[in-house]
Image (cartoon, rainbow over all chains, first blue to last red; front, side, top):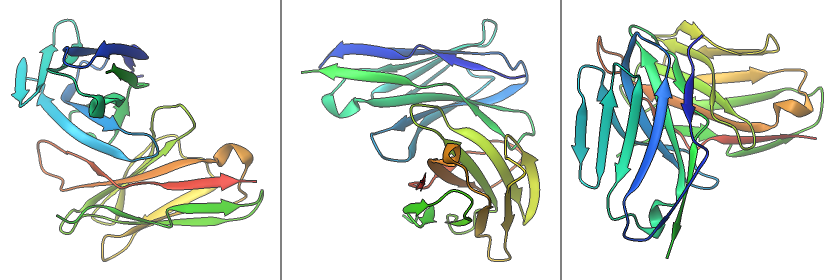
Length: 111
Length: 114
């Protein structure tokens, strides 16, 4: 079945860049998403990328997609303490209503 | 902007009881999804509805059922509750197109089964 994998933890200093990585197995993925979840809160959509793109930039966020290697990354520039959260990578396949989530990467930002 | 509304936000039940969770999608969204997130886990897809019909099914136990009503709100019915059902239940909604199906999540209902 489809699977999405992420590293569990990342710690960075305030002001540095954070790079969160994700790999997926579904070769029919059409859209890949990044969600942010703060403690006790819901999932906030950050950004998404179509599978026929290799990069998308949105303010401090840069998404890179290597479709050949099925590797997705989220770069957060100038990371702030408010960016501390769990970041979920999610994969949606063609024509599907189901979205598969990774286990989430917990980002710690040190002041 | 209007967001996905879920009620109740918190629910405490005892084993073998039943629970009903409600979800009100973003206006004009036609698709609703339910996810279960256990403590420290990623959200697991349960079930989805498009235009009031079930569109996809994930790891939803037979004890659970769901439906989408004519006003597009959805209810997740959970019977014979077990301790392991304690989790955060998210509803998401989207406007289904032939392309992106970006899901917007509600704040979740935290269910505790004692």
